[in-house]
Length: 166
Image (cartoon, rainbow, N blue to C red; front, side, top):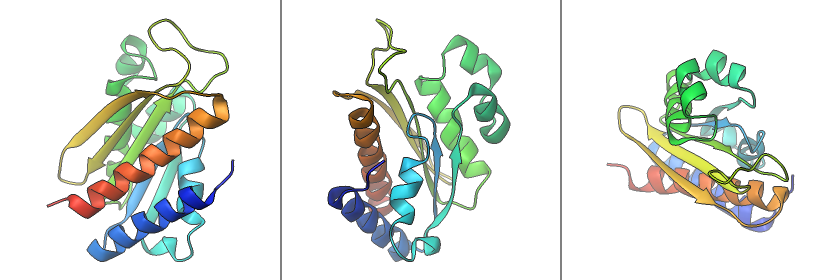
């Protein structure tokens, strides 16, 4: 897990956008294993704008900590739009955050299928009292590259929502 200059700068911009609104953020991570939270907390003063992170790598953890339904996991799978939507809703419900992100994906090198090849990642962002937006991406590269690109996409999505929310 490497926090490079580009990732650090993005986390700083996220912090600036959140501080400007007086907002807190939360993360719900599966395939990134806490890397989003680590990128955020590398920035001095991030305790002013980062509430908490949930690392929910197993389905049990997703259900227990974030209230993801067993039915969703069974019918849609952990790497799905429905799952990340429930993850981000749970992160908002179980935190003091105003904005949250959730990620779940197939980072590889194994675990890919025809329907969900290695690099497939679902991300969702939610605003307290607002809507949830989700997107799927198929990132290129090895496990480290997929995870890094997921962190960057997650941070940028949080920043954009903090900067542009009504």
